[in-house]
Length: 275
Image (tube, rainbow, N blue to C red; front, side, top):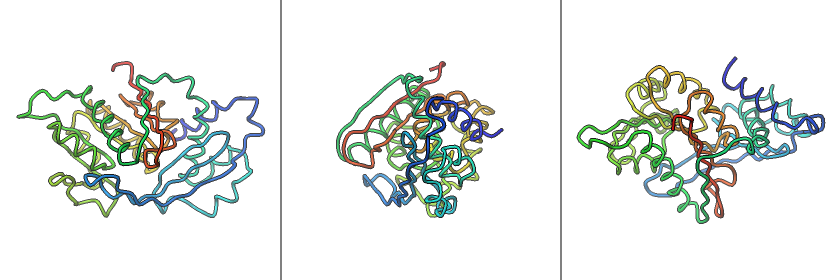
């Protein structure tokens, strides 16, 4: 059974029995996003699907992975129908179901920030870097710890470089592969995932790895090489705390509304028992 299959079983079990018969898919919001909150950050050109059942869930996705003609046909159907839908739909609906489980998970940190997307982008990036520092304190600037980032955020790379870490970065976006981030960090192709994890003390991975099918490999490689894992998630922000069961050391969840939108955002940090 795959990681996603196991999560599907868990998510469906979280739906209260009293509402299972009548719980339907009520809507979808499909967005194209072009966004650069700060000069140090990359230009994000991406796609985002939000699903509504009782709650809302989200999946960022690769363009070819969504069958858009499915969206209207699923409205009014049981949430169970998402099991046979294309991957972004499956994840977004699943994420909405995991919202039922939030009360059963206790975060180590709960943070709130109100402001512009620019202000909140920096706020989120600092939280990620703070959690990395707890896992791999900078001890020797002459031989710095190596941190890998899978799914590149230029702002996180920028802050980690300021902290004097060595950085490995890889991404599945062909327009980003081969580019240099923050002046001297070359972005490797996603095929170098294992190499990056093997050669780093901590790996940072975005929640979108579930939508690209690479999250499970991240956990497996990290286990093989003794690398610590930090997940930061907009995709699957409600289900992300369960990654602690599969090998994540820290999970940083950003439920909607995301930092990309002006106003109040919340971030929940979950640490494994070893932290």
